[in-house]
Length: 180
Image 1: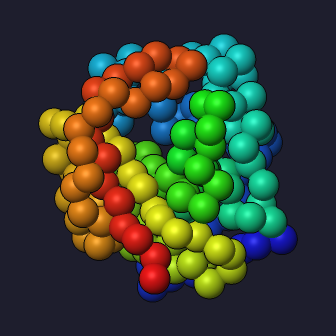
Image 2: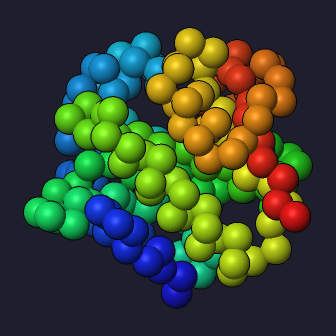
């Protein structure tokens, strides 16, 4: 099984359906959900009927695909997660060597560099364990916090386009990094 080594301030653990309470707690802050769905907090039914089945459909710890829980080293507190899955996974043409990175973090951890530190740790591990041509991330155009993280990861703007997803299509910005 693939594992992400600890970084300077953070510990990583592959999340499973046994972590529903952590995921639920994270999604209870309307500010956290602002750029996900306009600020609607998740219900337990949202998690068990939608998010967890979606996560299970792409989760593969041997490849690093899934949600990586992020915990602080100083007190082992759960502060968020990093998502890894093939780009366009929910389409007829997934891009197996172009991995999508995403993140969701508790508001109390914002502005401390945790999401960037965690995304770098995950990205660096994945680069050395499999054949990847690109890392891609997407965000709503006004989600400057996520866009700043993408830039810190070395990603550059590719386009603004409609991202098609079974849960709904949204206009997003795409940032990408090629792996040499």
